[in-house]
Amino acid sequence: QITLTQQAESLWVSPGEKVSITCRASQSLLYTDGKHYLSWYQQRPGQTTKALIYHASIRTDGVPTRFIGSGSGTEFTLSIEDVQPEDIALYYCLQTLKKPNTFGAGTKLELK
Amino acid sequence: EVQLVESGGGLVQPGRSLKLSCLASGFTFSNYGMNWIRQAPGKGLEWVASISSSSSYIYYADTVKGRFTISRDNAKNTLYLQMTSLRSEDTALYYCARFEYYDGYYFDYWGQGVMVTVSS
Image 1: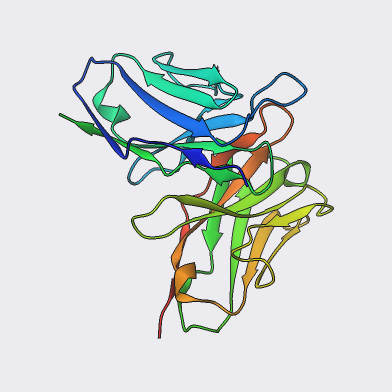
Image 2: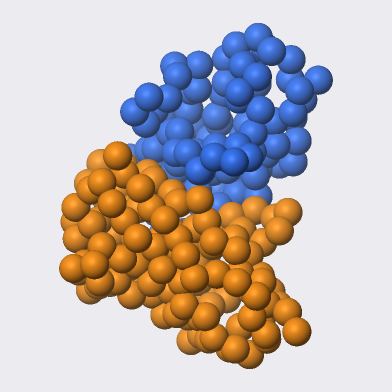
């Protein structure tokens, strides 16, 4: 199965700063259609899990432009520019290229 | 508005069975694949099972294969997860999630989750 590694368990950030969360896959997530099957999710207490990014870099409807997905092959990054207090949450990457679909272990964004 | 509401969780003894339901609304349920994902207390997300829109394709995580059965009733807009031979390691919050197949191949909507606790 494909393993996704989110090295940072936690990242500390101040409001207004930029932060990057990385996700490394054990094999390429690029399919023959030229798309990467990697998505990002946000978990906040009391709220449903929210999809932020799909195909590595496409924001879902309504996601603020400060959330930026990038990367290719096996290395992916979710960057949050000008972090807001409401961005304090858990973030997960997910691959849907192959079954079993697998998640990264998650990165917790915390306030300094 | 898309809504997914899970139910059927609770406390169950090891070795027993439990059936979870996920009632969908706000979209044409029969057009979408669906998934179950779980999260053990204090742990990360684990994909459990998926089912295609017409139930033609079904997949399971190795950790539940042979014990869990995913199914759906498109007439009732409901997704199910029949869990048997439950173990303590199945203790988790279970989410249902819609699979956006047409544009993105990701889980675009999630429910709030239902807690399953396996303990004697």
